[in-house]
Every structure is written in C-alpha cells, then in structure tokens.
Amino acid sequence: MDFIEIAKSAKKASLEIADLSTELKNEALLKVADAVDAHKEDIFSANRADLAEAEKLVACGEINKSTFNRLKLDENKMRDMIQGIRDIARLDDPVNKKLFVRELDKELTLYKVSCPIGVLGIIFEARPDVISQISALAIKSSNAVILKGGKESKNTNRTILSVINSALEKVEGFPKNVLNQVFSRDDVAEMLKCDKYINLIIPRGGNSLVKFIKENTKIPVLGHADGICHIFVDESAKPAMAEKVVTDAKTQYPSACNAVETLLIHEKFPYREELLAALQLDEIKLEFNPENWAHEYGDKILSVKTVSGVDEAIEHINTYGSGHTESIITTNLENAEKFMNKVDSAGVYFNASTRFADGFRYGFGAEVGISTNKTHARGPVGLEGLTIYKYKLIGNGHIVADYASGEKQFHHRDLTI
Image 1: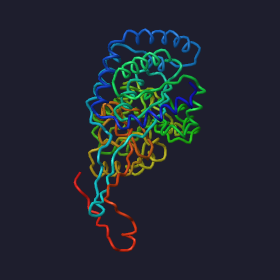
Image 2: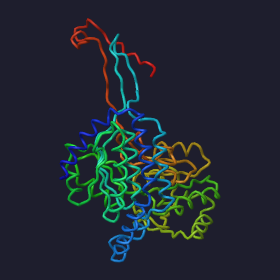
Image 3: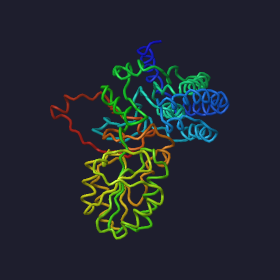
Image 4: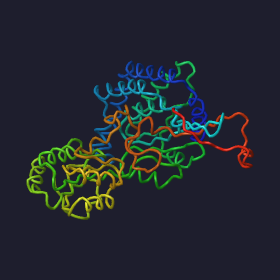
C-alpha cells in the first residue's frame, strides 16, 4: 500500500475512533498491555537483531553511542512499557469533556467540548518504547497515527506494532487502521506533504530531525528543536540548594532535552566561586565563551555567565533560550514571581531542577514529547495535548434573523459544567 492509501485509511479510522466509548478504549488498552507482556520474548528477540545491526552503525559513525543506548530494551524498560499502557487506561478520558457551557438565549445553548485532533504523524529516532507510548495515548485520545521510526529500530518497531494491532483486532468494535507504520525515507517525504489527511506532525528526536521537519512541511508541528535550559542563581540563593539543583539538572541525565545548559549567577551572589568549584568536583566542565550561549551540549558541560540581577537574567534567557524550561534559585519571592511571569518558556520553575519537565513527572501518565510551541499545547504533551475542541450549539428552531431584527436578544449566561 502506498503512503497516500495509508493516510486515507488512517483518516477514515480517525473519524470512527472519535465516537468510541471510554469503556471500549480502556478494554483495548488492557488487552494491548496483556499482549505486549505475553509476547515480550518476541520483542526482545527483534530488539537483539536491531542491536546487532546498530553496533555496525556505531562502528562506522552513522549513529552515536547514546542513540545505541536508547535503542536497547531490557526488562525494566519492558516493565515500564506495559505499566505505562495500563496507567493510561486508568486516566480520565480527555475526549468529549465540556470545557464551558453558555446559554445564549432561552433554549439556545453553546457547548465547548474537547475532541480528537485527527491523524497524527509521528517521526522518531531510536527508542522503540515510543511505539507503545504513542499507540496507547492515541487510543485513549481517539486519534489515528502514522508512525515512522528510525532504521536502527525497524525490527523492534515492526514487532511491537504487530503485537499491538493483533490485540486490537480481537476487540469487538475497535476500528481498523487506527495505528499505522511506515519505514522508508520516501514515506517521510510523503508524510510531510500530506496536509490533506494528516493534522499534526510530532517529531521525537535530535535537533537536526526536528529542524528538518519544521522547515519542510505545511502541517502544524508539535515539538522542540532545542533544549537550551537555564538556571539563574539569585543573590539570595541558598548555596547548598543551588549546588544540589544545578548538579541534578546537569548530571542526572546530561543528554536529556530538559538538562540545564547555561548557568546564570548574580554578580553579588557571595558563594560564586564555591559553587563553581563544587560543580567541577561533580565532573562538570565549565564554559565561559559567549559563543556557546545558544548551544545545547547534551553532555556534562555547562555555560556560565555572571549577570547584574534578575532583569538581565530574564533578558538573557528570552534572547538565547529555546523556550523549553528555566529555573530561578532564590529566597526573594518578588524576584521569583518576576522571573516566572516574564520568562517566555514552556516551563518556569522556582527552586527546582529543570529535569522535572516530563510528562510522567507531571502525572500525565506518558507524553508524546515536549512542545515549545505557543499554540494549543505547550510543555510535556500528554493526553490533553492530543485533543482540540469544537463548539456544539443546541437550539429549538432558532434563527439569526430574529436577533438581527431586535425581536430577540442574547443574554449570554454561563452555566455550571
């Protein structure tokens, strides 16, 4: 089947799954979790085949070691995959929620109601556990998806989705073609052109992948190209807290998109040298070159800049940041409030590590990624971020002419949901 036929079938499936009951979707999710558990040895076998091929790609420089590490599935990741599907089944259904109810006039009522986005195009690298996450989120949010993983995880991706779709075929009333998968670069090119059938593209991968997608499609893209996160240590910051938070934000998982990349220190912070020395003891390399202020290291390297105060810190972040996640360490509540109000990022924190920017840690159950967009979804995107809304108007033969003539008047009364 060529890509356009896949996209057409996904569009048709998206219209069918939009009307599925919460009970049926949850039944489907639990059967998927059971199927993945029952076939985990098949998935491990496919993953071993991918790892063997990926070792050759590392040796010739086509992929790096961190990509190889993300590719590997083990018992812990498998357990988390299965539990993640079951956790999503327990979450509230994000579809058909009444967001507001307004009586425009007697017997004329307007409802704002959440609804699925439609067809999602997901392009991702390595990490085969993305397949189960996205599939589960798509089922619960009543969206159809077309998945395109990296060549390094082709066998694992194919096996996982085959297990999932086989389970869904046994759920009476569940539509066909909700979850689809493509494999070639030509399919990516077709996906990016397919604005007639695909409603949203979500890239999950490195900086270059996201930038390429954003520059080569008219379809809305939800994601982030860079993760240039900052921590500002204010004059009044507690030194022990500053060291603990900065160290966690840089070293807990240096290659994560929410790891801190630039440390801003108030010029009057009295423990500046002690803080920098402590960070170096934690094997963090410090950089003081202004040319690196817009650089994402993804490693135990940290840019450092001294600033005159909270205003300069805010200006620096809004100039060089990527709109991802920023934090202020301070005991000054006025400065904290100013920082959190004026910094233009998806996440703004007070006395906390930037590494908290994560759907699981936010209690979303899972995420499709982190968005730095300023559209319908921002920050970690879970179930709610995979819905949009529509307006439903219920009347009793009402016509606009009666209001245009003055015979009737609107009274616009908001009702309790």
